Image (tube, rainbow, N blue to C red):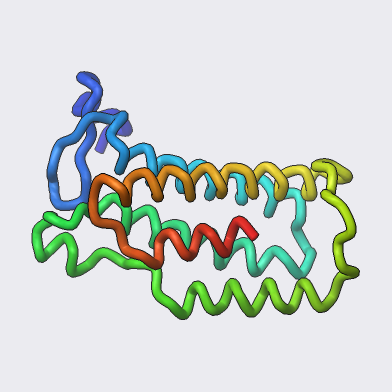
Length: 161
């Protein structure tokens, strides 16, 4: 199997289920930004190796694959495509909330904004936060035009926190 297919040379791609759409469609932009977030988290994880946060980052990256698949499967996809697509579940959102509560309890209350930087890992996490907020905006835009799983927006909202 070759790495290139030439099927996107005219500016189109396939969603799960086979539907062809332009590469700048809202749905493609939304799951593409989630993919970008996953890559930025990979950079953060590489800088934060051997720290307790690494496990949480890897779990989030796994969740983001589920979210990307969810967004790449339109509501009118075939039952077969929809049936095997993983979707963000309320338990994944709840897990994020538990982590946020735990991290908040372990740190002093913030009295001001934190400047991005400080360390390569910290800077990468700040970048991930901003990409996450952009992904959330893209998914909200998509939700105005097409059906989106409500958990997709909620998950990104919690993650940006």
